[in-house]
Amino acid sequence: MAMAEQLQFVHFWRFEVQPTFSMRDADNFSTIYGPRIYEWCIRIDRGDTFGFRNIENHGIELSVEPTIRVFNIRLPADSTCTFNLAIRHQGTNKVMLRVRPQVCSVIDEPHGNRGYYVPQTSDLGMALQKIFKGTDYFGQICELTTTMTMPITAFNLDEVENLAPRPPSVPDYRFRMLNDKSRLDFTIRCRDGNITAAKEGLFLASEYFRDYFEGADHQDANFGDVDKQAVLIALTFVLTGTVEPPSTLSPSFVCDIIETARQMRALNFPRLRNSLEAEAIKWAVKQSEDLPALLLWFICSHDCSMPNLHMVSLSYISSTHAVQYMRDYTDGSMVISVAKNDPEMAEKLNKRQGILRPTPHQRIMTSIRCGGKVRTVARVEVPA
Image (cartoon, rainbow, N blue to C red; front, side):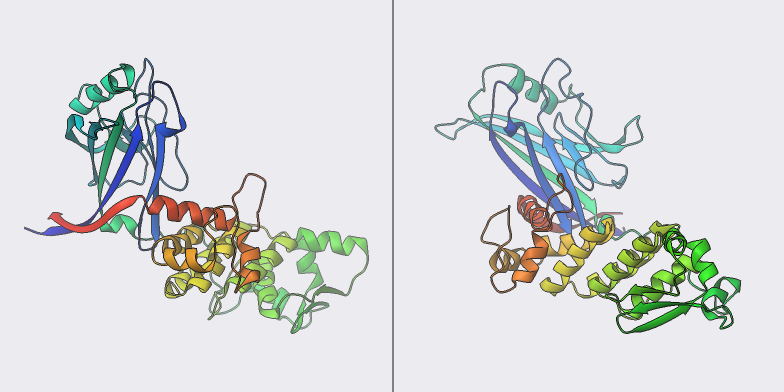
């Protein structure tokens, strides 16, 4: 019989049973393996509709509610979740109640989500109602152990979609605005050289240049703080809608291309960003053993709104390099990064992109804390 390799994650949650809602009614944790993170929120629900509250999709990937529920479209069908519950006396630590483990398979929810669900009529469902709707166990300690088993393939990277096409092997009519010397009547000045292009093409393809030309009869434009290659990639996309990935890629180079394309107000800008993100992920995986490099990729994903690159770099930082990050880039605070040997990096880690958005440092610390709540990660084999 063929065997399939799966990953098993064990999360242990210990909290005091409260008579009313409290902050302790929920706990967050993350399952991390390789380049992927699944984020979870276990929530104790109460009230007359115990266990049937609407689910909230938390963070990047998933939510879990014991009643117990978990919902996410991406969850593999052959994954399972097992809940073990026990009540211990606050003073003596003696077990007052132990419920038979409840194994939950994946079900499809009417709204299109996929998740785990413990029926209220099950032993665990009845026990939860007894614990949180009655008064016998108030003030005692509840221990909830969650064992999640998922195929190792669930942690593979997804392909980035909606990419810009690559240039054709033989340049077509779209490239005349860059290659036809008889049309090249406008100069773009860069940090390390100049680019010439057709003014008519820039006027038609870029809203930025349209406004620029209407202000005065300019013969050149200054992008003097950006490398020529970064400007050329952005400009080629603006005029042709194609992207040729460079042979080497760095976080600063990606940011320069993105910022230049944004300044030019390129049409179909997300396709350029997606193409760069797909290439950036490959480089982040190659450099997954280098924490400073990963931090730069993570900050790049933060600045350029690249969710897949964000997840990949955060996953490696939070698992492989958690101890090193805590030692070198923080004094233990979740609020600010203190990197005495690299103040420039600390400044980037503490930079906020909006009032409601966490800084890169806060996001890393949250991921390290949630990932650290998983006690065991094991590889197991099950019949395929």
